[in-house]
Amino acid sequence: MRDIAAALLAVLDAGGRGALATVVRTSGSTPQQPGARLLLMPDGGTSGTVGGGAIEHAVLVVLAEARRTGTSELRTWNLARDLGMCCGGTMVVFIEPMVPSTCGSDANGV
Image (spheres, helix red, strand yellow):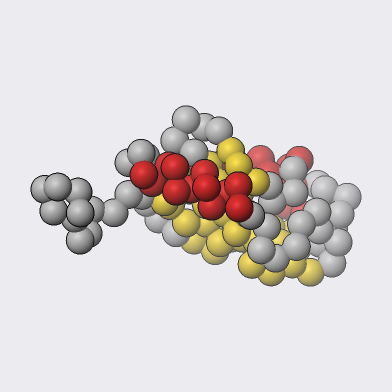
C-alpha cells in the first residue's frame, strides 16, 4: 500500500494524470480482497495489483478511460461470466481519476 501512496504522490506532485482502482467488495473466490489497489500512471506504468490476469486487464482499460475523461465509476465484474476466469467470484472496483489540484495555490505554488 505504501508503494502506491508514494507513486500516487509522485504523479500528482509532477502535475500528471493517473487513475486509481480500489477493490471495494468481493464475493466468492477472487484473486484479491477489498482494499487492493492498482494505480495507472501517466506513462502507462502501474503500481499495485487487483489480481492479475483478465481482471487486471479489464480494470486497466477502465482506468485508461477514467484518466482520459476524469470520470469516476463503480464497476462490478463476475469473474467467470464476464472474464472467463476460473475463480468464479465477483469483484466490485471503484475507479477514480487522479488529477493535480490547483485549488488553494497562489502564484508561488503555495
